[in-house]
Image (cartoon, rainbow, N blue to C red; front, side):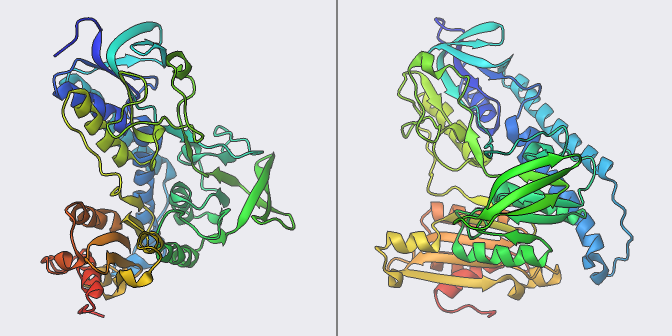
Length: 472
């Protein structure tokens, strides 16, 4: 299938979850494929300094927390835990090395060439990668995203006082007091890690609730859960500056709506206010491609940009910045490049917060569902089931959380599912698949679920939509 006028049929720029998956899928479809990556290892932010290492630290810190907060003792396990932070970091790095090395193996297996170096467009089909120049009939931009800077705050990961998410993974010791700027997914996950390991954690969030974008019931419950765990929440609060003196940082705060200024001291400050697309330095101006106001590359339904032969996926295009979204887009884009039909249902991209418990959701929030029904609350049905009434959660000492199902009253079709549970991230996949096939709440309610499992809470929430839950 190769076009001999070019070095490659497909050149993918970026080897994150979207990029490496697109490259492998393109090669599987018989296209001569290369992937440009400037890092020393493949996998992008997700595998190197994002999803994977943070989950390794979250999982390890959960064990330590269970040993120190009395949960293990309640189960009849008497232990005297001692933190070995160096070993905790070592197991994290080992997980990263294994997975990034695995991608390199998959590239070799599928005959994908790794072009090492920063990629810059010379024209739509010619890309300079490091010191080499590569031509390709099709170029897929999959360069991901990076941390959004906060005005008047300078991040220096080396000093480990004011850090971003990458720096927060590498702290050499547990800070006595950590301030997390941003009450979103990344801030709460990494803040949870260091709280479990002994830090006093204060979360400063500009909005009046945590976890923007999630269902309002989830956001309210999240505040209760994190407060109960010992986090201090400063909501509706703006950080106007951070000054570092010696080994301490002093934050300047004020109410989001304006008001009297105050200061807050910390041993470590984590800046986590979001991410922005990596489009600078790509030479997009050389191919006549502009970004929108959010710095994103606009695409059509098939992931084509306005420039013939140039495609884009993942964090650089509109939509949630999630690894699994990028992966699905990578597969679909490669299939479209190969002349097949690749599709991603962007209405059903699940989101997960991997704290304890986990927070997950897919589809519409209650507010969005009501808006979709013209503002008529009567056109929306809701079923809710508490995890404290779930037998598996009870035996596992995991009583916090609930499952909430939102359905259209007239058709009973499920519009959204939201969950707080220890394994909510796993549970949400069932809901996503059901919604992909247009399930009604009755479909879920009459589907047999294994007992005892956390997922029975989804069945019970569906039965609650019907007005007939059994265990509440």
